[in-house]
Image 1 (cartoon, one colour):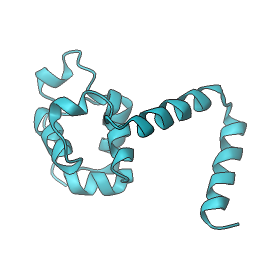
Image 2 (cartoon, helix red, strand yellow; image 1 turned 30 degrees about the vertical axis):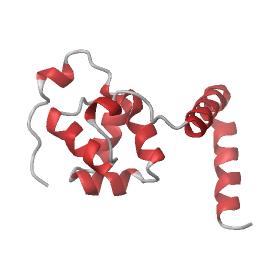
Image 3 (cartoon, helix red, strand yellow; image 1 turned 45 degrees about the horizontal axis):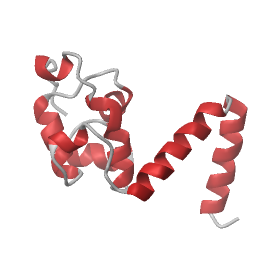
Image 4 (tube, one colour; image 1 turned 180 degrees about the vertical axis):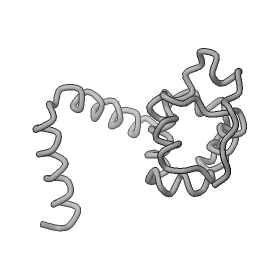
Length: 117
């Protein structure tokens, strides 16, 4: 992939573009790899955007909005579907309470359930 230019100042200057990018990706049922491929960036870049360690450029936000079938403005907030918001907030609260061992345990349980065990 081509080397990325420096982030635009308008996206790097204190905006919180990353706050809801992960929620939008999950809302659209995409993995990081799928979303990154559609936006034409590396999965690591998308991960950095979602964590807030690398601000997306304006054209990156436009590409994300297209892939997530929404507007750049809407990406600044969570997806507006009540059931999704409640579930997302509930998961965030639970994750905040788990230690590393607890998280590994529940991830293993979820993976086993997904495999039908």
